[in-house]
Length: 67
Image (tube, rainbow, N blue to C red; front, top):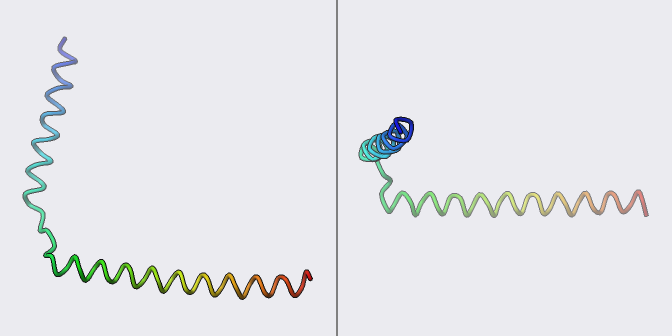
């Protein structure tokens, strides 16, 4: 019986402490979120284009040597 009480107290303590920590967080503003989202989208496009070009070049190179 004591183990189950300890378990429940542990869960309760976890949620209480988590709530207290979340109150300390400095959340980003809506403007920051928009900028960060655009940065992620732009970088994803750049990396995708780079990898696509690299794939195309390597495919051409391999097909020339292997026929």
